[in-house]
Length: 68
Image (cartoon, rainbow, N blue to C red; front, side, top):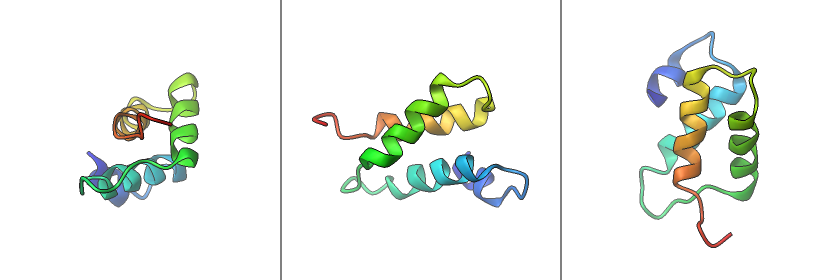
């Protein structure tokens, strides 16, 4: 899904940002940064984002630093 969002010319900047973050975390040594965690959290709480964007936000949060 993330690659599709990155290629989609109609995808929002927020969706692309979340997709890029999710893709970069495929490497186990990468974790979501605090700024991206905040963005993903706001997306999940909002009614204005699509299901695809919310799915990317959830993926990003699932890879976040659990100690933060």
